[in-house]
Amino acid sequence: MLGEVARLIQKARRGVVLTGAGISAESGVPTFRGKDGLWKQYRAEELATLEAFRADSKLVWEWYNWRRELIRKVHPNPGHYALVEFKSWFEDYTLITQNVDGLHRRAGLDDILELHGNIQLNICVECRLPDKAELDIDPDNIAQCKHCGGKLRPGVVWFGEMLPQAVLQKAFRKAEEADIFFSIGTSALVHPAASLPVLARQRGAKLVEINPDETPLTGLADYYFAARAGELLPRLVEVVSKEHKA
Ligand code: APR
Image (cartoon, rainbow, N blue to C red; front, side):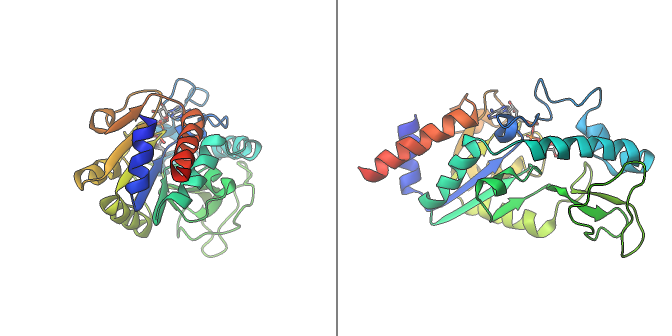
């Protein structure tokens, strides 16, 4: 199967990758819906919302500070580094991520479509302008926006909120044009991200899924690897490098 995918990669001009929390699992960042995915007794859906922030901004900042602290301590894993290698395989390579942990950037990719924002950034809850970029926020004394005095919140997209439209439109365009589309480490449950691989497949792309667990996408995939990204992707890089040399 890896050889077949390697040959598809050789023929493809436009490659697109969509990643989810699973690509960072082997770095030690808990996924949202996996067995280790819950934080204490809360679920992301209950904390990553504007309503939760309005109701208890202290609790929401405690959760985000816990996640920021954890992310500062972790590092990209072989899966992230393998996805940097993909850059040399395609004339046009796009990495789209649902993750807010910034690990793709730390692995060496800079042109990334971050659909859900970046956890390390602060924006104003009222005017949504960025402010005090990487300031650590004290949950008991939440810093205020210099533009309008609103409370600062994490620069991520919360449930029920619109995704950054320019980023999303580019992601859809790239999915439509893809020759090959990889869905890696995502449960393929949260839209609009989850519709990107489906759209790509409908427009004729070959769809490759890498996830230890099956997802709603698995039945649609041309190739499904029930594997961890950090283990499978370096093997794929090895096979492709051999094919390139051949
Ligand atoms: N390699 C590949 N996949 C893995 C690995 C791994 N090592 N470990 C776990 N997974 C898979 C899980 O099987 C699961 O299907 O990663 C997926 C993670 O799914 P979720 O936790 O639902 O994360 P994600 O798909 O990114 O969630 C989408 O939902 O909570 C919101 O905004 C949040 O961006 C997030 C969005």
